[in-house]
Image (cartoon, rainbow, N blue to C red; front, side):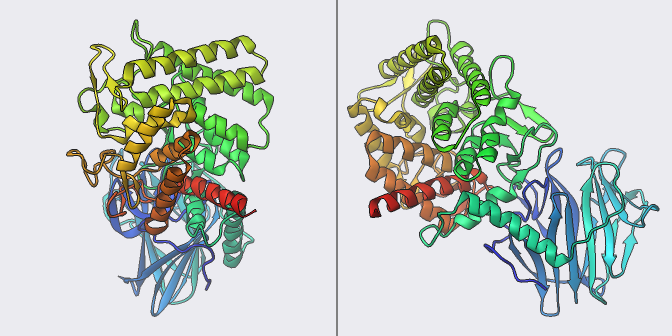
Length: 574
C-alpha cells in the first residue's frame, strides 16, 4: 500500500477531489449536514450525495481511521486498509486488503422522480447506479476480487449496492458519465494512478506557489483547496472554473471569482484569466453580471459589487500577456457592467449608484443595511471610481482616447459626489436614494472606501485607518466593530473575519500609505489561516473556522497575501 505525498488534511473539513472533477469524496451531504460515512458527492445539477462508501469486514461495518492527501484517500484499522485515488476527472479506483467495502445508493427510496436505480449491465457485467439527482450514471467495475450486488433492479424502498469481499485483495473502479461508454479498460496500475495524481497536483503547486517555504506553512494546503475545487466546463459553467467549494457553497459568485483569479495570476495565467472572465460569459442585456453560476443554474435576482476594475488592474500588471483582441472584448464587457451601475442603479437626479439589498454588496446582512436595504454607500462608489479609472486606462491603451476622457470625467463625478454626499466629518455614511436620509453603522463595510487609497484626501485616509484599527482582533479585521451591540460571533457579516474584506482593505491601506497597518492585517490573517484553515469565515475572537470549511477565496486570499509578503521580504533583504 502507499504512503501519502503532499499536505495531509481532514475530509471533515476539505473534500477529497481532483482538478476538473464534478464530484468529490466527503461526509458533507447537504448544507451544514455531515453523514457518518464518506459519500461520493456530485455537484452536477446541484449538490447530490450519490453513493455511500462503508468499510466492512465479513459483511459488518467497521470503524476506521480516514486519512487524506492530494493524491490518496485511505480507510484503515489494525487489520486492513482501503485506498481510493482519481485516475481521471470522472473515474476513481479503489483497492483494499483485510477490509472490504460496501458501495450503495445514498438514497434508499426510488420513485418515478427521485432516488437511484440500480442494475447489472449485461454488456460487461458491471453494476450501474443511475441517479435522478444528478441525471448521471455511476458504474462500478470489479477489477480484482469478488463482489455481490444487492437490490439489483428493485423498485421502491430497499438497499441497493455492491458488497466487495475482504477475503482477498480487491480492486474496483467507479465512473461518472452521462448515458453510455465502452466497458472500462486501463493499462495503469494503482501505483501509477497515485503517481499521476501526485504529478498533477505538484505541477499546479509549483506553478502557483514556487515561493512557498517555512514562512508560509499553509501554502500547499491552500493550493490543494483551489486545485481540488476546480471543475471542467459543463452545463452553464463555460470555462475551467474554481468553485467556491465542493461542499455546499458549490457556485461561482460574481465577485468571489476575482480573488481566485488573482491568486492564480502569476503562475497559471490562462486559468486565472478564465476565472476573471467566467462571470462575464453570462452578462445580461442590461450589462449586469449574474449573482451566481452553477452547473445547472444562473441567478440574476441580485448582483455583486463592481470590484472587477480593481481586479483587472492587478491582473494586467501580473499576467505576462493578454491578447489584444481578448483585452478589447474585456473592455467592452467591463464597460457594459459599469454602465449598468450608471444607468440602472442611479435614481433620477442622483449621481451615486445604489445597492438594492445587502446581497448586492456581497455583505448580505451587514448592519449598514439595517435601517434600509436600498442604499447608496461609499464602498460602492469607491469600487465604481476604481473601475472607471481602469476603463479609462484600457481605453487609452486600445487607442480610444475619447472614451478615456469620458470615463475619467465620470470617475471624477462619482468621486466628488461620494465625498460631498456621504462624508460626515469623520466617517462615511450610507444614504437612501429616495429620501436622502443618512445613517452610520459599526460595519467594516462603511470603511471600505479605503480601497481608493491615495485617491482619497489625506484627512479621510487617516480617519478611515483609525477606525479600521478599532475592528482589529488578534486574527484580523472583524466585519462588525467588536464593541458594537450588533456584533455576533457567528453573525455572517456582523462580526466574523472574511477573506475578501481583508484583501481589499489591506490593498487600500497599502496604496493609502499605511503600510505598517496593511502589514499587520496581512500577518494576522495569514496566521489565522495557518491556525484554522480556509473556512468561509472565522470567529473574530477565537479564530475558529465557521460555515463552509473549504472555501477557495479564503485559500486564495492567503496565497495572495503570502506571495506579496515573501516578495516584500526578499526586496527588503536585497
